[in-house]
Image (cartoon, rainbow, N blue to C red; front, top):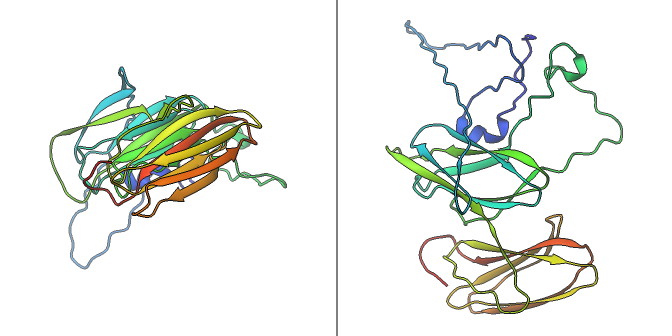
Length: 273
């Protein structure tokens, strides 16, 4: 509406939706294109509207159906420190799920320069980069049809499905479920992992607590990662193939919610350990 370039609200999911424009305010928008070539002819331009949809609440999280080879975006509102796993296993193995914070256009307006999204804002001395509202964590090695993400604050996110290199027809299912299990300190925590996958366990730590981790794997090389309440890495170990036991002790200095990630190290494929 001001005759200025697009401000790139969809850049974070560009890998899924390609060249696109999200209107931050009401008004007329224009697309300019140059055509090249020696031969004459006509050029046809098309515009498709992409409307983010909300997945349906289920007993274990959220679920929704999507159409193959169609640009799909889902909108999900998260609470602070919620960790979720999104998966769309029916997509082509070269496809991907991209998770990004949904742009908030409610703060934009054309009638005031400080609220006009097309006017550059001056950088004040001492300004720091805000903490990302969503942190993406490892889900499955080399398979981006699975996405693990945690909310750093209350936030609305987009989950976009990027089509793979192979075309196929039909529908697929997007599943979003809680990504953590409560870590028990009274008994061993057991589970099964496919090669390349990561499981997450959560526990509350108080300043001065001493936590000892002992990880035992059978039939695969295991990886262990501990994240503090700010999702910073406190400790990490990738076991060698001939090593099936790892142990480590932690004195909690920062109270809050901790995550323990256990991985079956590998590039994905077969095998269960």
